[in-house]
Image (cartoon, rainbow, N blue to C red; front, side, top):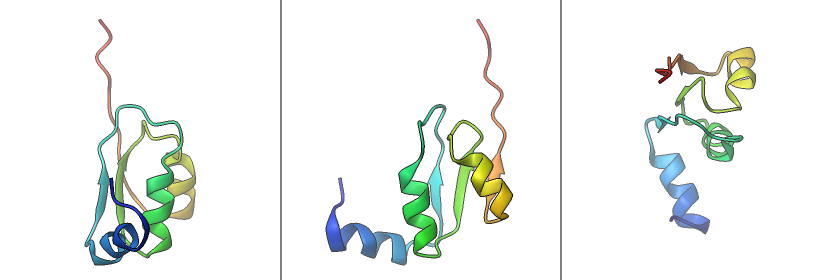
Length: 68
């Protein structure tokens, strides 16, 4: 796990932050990436997706889960 200056340096150096999650309670890492002006690509299973969509600062992938 990256911490401190190394973590923030990684965000600033990244071209894109991708979180291909099937379930995430909030997605604080998404907010951190956005705070460094790094574009994010997330699924609609990350709980912060509504705020990202509303803010128009996103690429959002809708995930359909197979029900078994």
